[in-house]
Image (tube, rainbow over all chains, first blue to last red; front, side, top):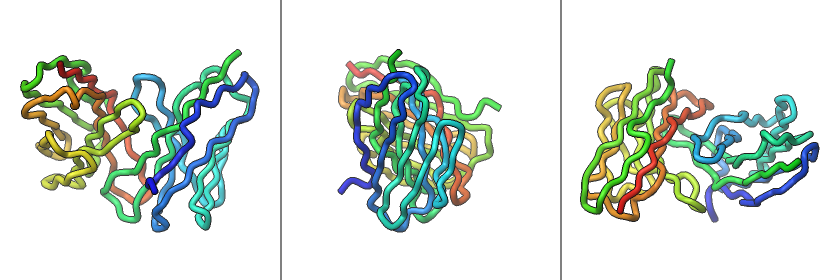
Length: 111
Length: 113
């Protein structure tokens, strides 16, 4: 089983749609969780951290289910500018080692 | 602050040539990382340095060497480039505290002919 698994997509949605991405991770001792966004030919950038209580940042909502080892990202009212690849990222228990990245889910929002 | 910088942005090499990719961060971070990203493969860790003076292998270290020159700089060297090393290389850094996230440089696009 891969350490972090995501549906690669692509997800093709119209503007204004709500879209959800899911991610599972294999290491139950993982401590920190993130969603990154990567635009074509650019570096990955942090979109938001994911907390056990769930967290929201504008149109974006992230959820963590530790029991199921499952992370989700919900995007409401999709914009053209949301078109990108979304990477699910997990941090091992200890610090100083690298984050573990999923392969990403591609989103394409059309007008 | 520039964050994480990488040079060069683009490079074309012939098989067997050597080169060094440079990375520097000005955020006083303890940990630094080198990844490669290939289509359909996601980000794969090549080497990392948890702190100044230490380096460790990641998932795909073969064909690469690294040097943590000081706290700011972490270089990646290809001693004898191969076409399989054609990729986009990203450097990243991390403060080293629990829950902290990584910051990436803009990447180096390398083509080995």
